[in-house]
Length: 333
Ligand SMILES: [Mg+2]
Image (cartoon, rainbow, N blue to C red; front, side):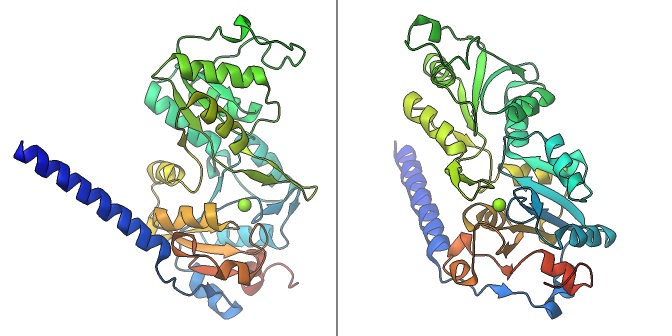
């Protein structure tokens, strides 16, 4: 009894200590961001063997490459750096990323790209085995990544039917072998899809809710912000009462996957991104160095300087293309 009580007290103490440590990490007086100037760039790049990139807002803005970025990437490859692209965007299959890279003159192979769709697929197959059944509330890109990893996709009839105006038993016939629902941004989200996902989670207690990522909004090329993966995830979470497992940034899953599959040395790795609450937190919590660029979601140094704790970048620069210009490639803007 005494032992059990002691253990409970110790566990409670550990929980308080870990909450306190997290609080301190989030609120501690932040170190100054080192803004790189041209003369710093050569020594800065020598710190790393592996460079991890977010794509949207760093490599490209919608369909256009950020100026001087393709030239800078080519130079880094020439210097022997390993370049990997880490994206929260689960709507595209990696082959679609390659098409985009090719159009921009950027060299890349399918193994250089890791998305939250890939992470979700690997996570699912590792937990449930090849051939296990999954229901995907997401785009065709997500479905293809799950299939590539060996999952069996359940495809309910009429899930895209928007003509049926009544609910009823036809919505409730779900496959009892579904082991998980994977939720991501879904451009064809319907009540039928949500119903299928929610029924699986309500009826089968072991059925997991896997979220590719939780982004509330995504910035589109037309300058507007539209509902992101969070719209799908939160709907299913709210209706089913199931807590999702989040795969994408800022969670640690994608970095763990990279470490396992690429064997990188974290002490010689940098994460480059445009968002402090996903990319920078992902890198800092994951134990790699971080560089913030101002070509995407963080528009200014002033905004970057407001960041605190785990969301504070170690380094900053106006654009990743400026690295190349400082090293003698591309055109000074
Ligand atoms: Mg981005």
